[in-house]
Image (cartoon, rainbow, N blue to C red):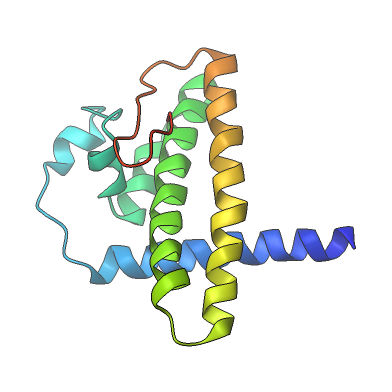
Length: 140
């Protein structure tokens, strides 16, 4: 039974990553100053972080270690998960196939739990820059 939960969690995580990667490469995004983002500019702004491509998110972690890496990684993962949850909510209500709807519900459950866990770490570890997400009232 525990193996099934783990498999669903891993599957949800991978599916969420795939959905976000697909969206990041196909959905129109307003132009942003990536130079500012790569140099540590307004990293706490959820709308800026969530509009970054997966490549930009990964590049922003390069050269960081220790607390600096952990803080940046958690910030990026929260934004990544929030994007996956938003997309999954659309799939849960708009998809035709039950398989897609079930996958979407699983992504929502798993990734919202992970977002809460990461936000707890941010608070426990004293990482600053946490801000309230205007869409759902969640801290990140």
